[in-house]
Length: 220
Image (cartoon, rainbow, N blue to C red; front, side):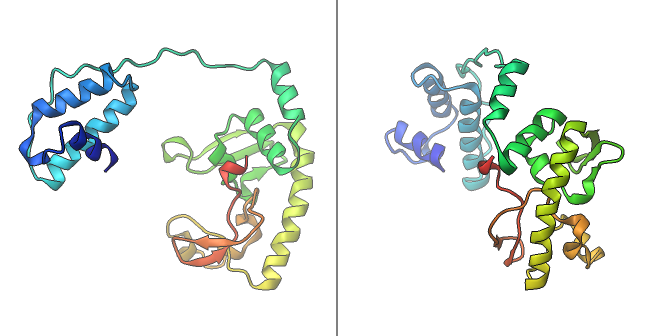
């Protein structure tokens, strides 16, 4: 809606039904040449306007050509040295520090780590099962031996909260898909508990139930 609004204002508040390919092309070229937007931003604007014409106005437009393409920035990634990583991790402590060490030692993405369940960690084999990772596929990654003791210590604290929630009758944690129906006892089982849980209870928008969630990514 934001891009549609900008498009209409750019063309002097003309109704989109009175405009077509030429006006769209001019607007997209303006974003690249005058506004200096990134290529991804220009593509987002283009998708929004084409959505407007196809699904709202129900107008089939020919392929928009002649658009000045925004240049994709060429940037090299910033890679920290082992010493810099060590200095960074030394400034982090508690649960967020443990998550950061886990990310660095396993190569997991942030949400993959935050969605870990207790049963996903295999201390004897030094393995972690990542559920529904990139491409919605499960995979196994290495569990660094240096994190075994800290993770086991963390699990003792997690178990206390788990037992407290069970005693208070707090609804079980969320399960993906139809697992909650297939295994009705799983949401209350220890193995399915979050490795990194939220401190406070919160509303689950999927079910409207107040329950324990995993740690929020912005916390880390």
